[in-house]
Length: 300
Ligand code: GRG
Image (cartoon, protein in one colour):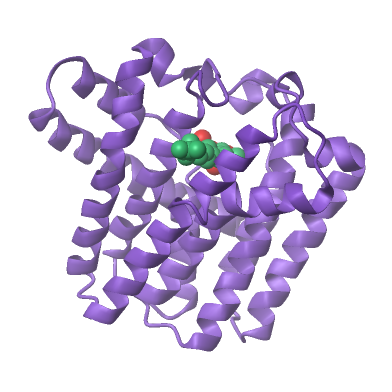
């Protein structure tokens, strides 16, 4: 598929996410007043790349799904991602002042408010997931598998566990295998889950699900390797967040291990492995390979 395929999919995911997240923010604003309501609107009202929603859409369609209601499931994944960014930027975590081209939520409001916004978004994501399951008329066993996949990827065996290990490792040199294990959980798990829930919602067979999971696993790591390269090579203006943050926090990164050129090559190797996983499962839809290329070639 042409390079433009990923761009078209991302544009669709951006428009879906922005529409639904604004609607969600307006709904929450009616229930949450004052500064917390404003901060919720601020956190939900940004414009990210929307890679995870795009992966949900592409995986769903690659597995034969056709319903427009998949948009809401894609949004549930993006709400989890949004909470993780708000908390990741807090002083007790990566302590960053910029995100998506503007001050982080705790800088614009305060730490207590940003902490509450993050916590509040977790059950909101689960509610959106339930609404998506209703709209898609998913059978009970599939609903359960979708919820379990997303929540397990967000929890101690996934994103939270990876973040925990990453924070613990600050200032300490890691072995390469340890770094990969951390990133597979911290960043990779949610990306893999985005692919798997898309497949589950389409009623994918175990073979297709394994292909999508393998794709998500490899592309999740490729995403992080590319992120490390960008952190070391791009500017704050390009990234919309503080460039060079990994080095200033003394983090072990793929760039530290491999240098920029070999880290770039590693991201491409992982993207190729991701596409092979699709091939092995007989998934011929070209949108996912196009997204894989975008993930490793992106400039922000
Ligand atoms: C309780 C220990 C504990 C953790 C809470 C905060 C958290 C859970 C986890 C952090 C997960 C995280 C933010 C990982 C980084 C992943 C990453 C590189 C995100 C950037 O994603 P992009 O580039 O961002 O897709 P946009 O802005 O485009 O959406």
